[in-house]
Length: 104
Length: 104
DNA sequence: ATAACATATTGACATATTTATATATGTATG
DNA sequence: CATACATATATAAATATGTCAATATGTTAT
Image (spheres, helix red, strand yellow):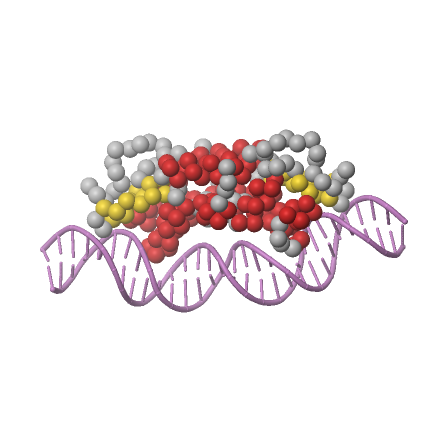
C-alpha cells in the first residue's frame, strides 16, 4: 500500500506538540466541549482553537457543532487510518540477510 | 498507565516531517547505512545527520556503528513503545452517556 | 604520521510553529 | 434588534525547526 507523505506528516502533527497531547488525553475521557477543554488547559481561547484545527486536520479528532458550542471527540476512523500509516512506516518488510551496504 | 507528555512528543516527532517519513519508508526495507540513505534522499549529509538524530532520539530508529559507517534500522522496542503511547492517546476510556458539558 | 573517507557538530539563515491580543463571525436570548 | 456568549480568524511577536556550508571528529588504509 502506498503512503501519502504530506498527509502522513499532517496526521502525526497531532501527537508531536505537548498541548495537543494533553488535549488528546482529555478527549480519551469522551467528547468534550471547547469551553471545557479551555478550562482544563492553561492556554488562551485562540490558542486552543489553533490546536483544535490541527487536531481536526489530522483526522484524529472530529468536531460537532451544536448551537454555539463545539464538541470535540476522538475519531475512530481517523485513529484507524493513523494506525495504518504507523504500521506501514514501522513494519520491516523483509528481514533481509544483506546487512546494509558498506560493511561487505 | 501514565504518559510522559514531553517524551511522547519526542516519539511522534519522528513521523511529522516529510523527510523523516521518507527515511522511515527506506528503513522498512531493512537496515541501511547512512551513505545509502544519503544517496536516496535529496538532502545534504548534515541534514541527514540531523534527521537521524531526531529519529534515534524518538526511539523508533536505532543506530549501529561499524567502523566509520553508521547503520540505521527500525527498532522493534521503540515501535512497541510508540504503539503503546498511541493507544493511550487514542483509546476512549468510557463511552459515557453525558455528551460533553454545555448542551444539557 | 598522513591522507582519505564517513559521519557529527557548529553557525547562520529562512521558514514554520506556537502563542497572545484584537477583532470578526455565528448563535441564542431578552 | 441588541446584547451576551462561544468560537474562529487576522495579525504580530517569540521561539523552534529545517537546511546548508564549513568544520570537527573518528576510522581505515597507505
